[in-house]
Image 1 (cartoon, rainbow, N blue to C red):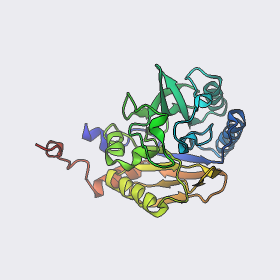
Image 2 (tube, rainbow, N blue to C red; image 1 turned 90 degrees about the vertical axis):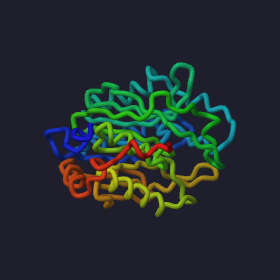
Image 3 (cartoon, one colour; image 1 turned 120 degrees about the horizontal axis):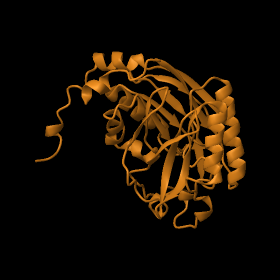
Image 4 (cartoon, helix red, strand yellow; image 1 turned 120 degrees about the vertical axis):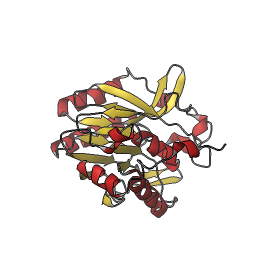
Length: 281
C-alpha cells in the first residue's frame, strides 16, 4: 500500500487550483449565481479544479443553536446540484462544492466532487461534529457514514477533509494513505479564531504527510461571526504557495505533483510508520 502512496499517480505533473472565497446571504439562488460566476472565472483562468467554502450556498446557520435550517437542505438530485454539474461540464473544470446534504434520512455537511465532464464522483461528509459556541453543528449534522474518501480525477488524486475534521491528524493521514496528492478543505474560519495557529496546523500536516493542502474559506459578516477569508494552498514541504486576504474572488495556485515524491523521499515519514504500535495495548 505504501509504495503506491509514494509515487505520483498521474502522467501530467502540474495542475492549477482555484479557491473561490465569497460572502453569502440567505438567498440560495443568489449564492448559486455568485458561485457559478466564480467557477466560470476560474475556468477562464485555466484552473483544473475549483474549491468552494463550507456551506457554499447558504448562510452559516450552525452559529445558532437548534434552529430550523430545512430550507437549506439539498438532495443529490436537486436543481442546485444539477447546476454545479452542468457548469463543470460546460466549462470543463472539476468543482468541489460543500452543501447541506440530505441522504437516506440523515443530513450532512458534505462536499461533492464533480469532474470536468459533470460527473459526480462521490460525496465526502464531515466525520467529526463540533458542538461549541457559534458551531452548534450537532444540532444539524449527522456524522459521516462513509469515512474519508479519495477521488481519482484527471488532474490528481484528491481527498476532502471538511472544516472541523482538519483538527484531527487522522483525517489528512487517512486520505494520504489512500493515495491523495491534494487535500481540499472547505472551512468557515472567523477573525475571532487563531488564524496563525490554523495556518501552522496546515503547514505541519502538509509537511508530515508530503501532500498539497488547499483550504477554502468564507468571507463577510454573518450575525455575530466575521469570516476571515485567508484561503491558502500549502505545498508538501509545508510552505504556503498562496494566501488570500478577506476579499471576494478566485485565489490561484499552480502545483507540481512531482514535488510530492521529492518531499517524501527527503522525509520518509510514511514509509517508516509502525501502525502496530499506535494503538494502546
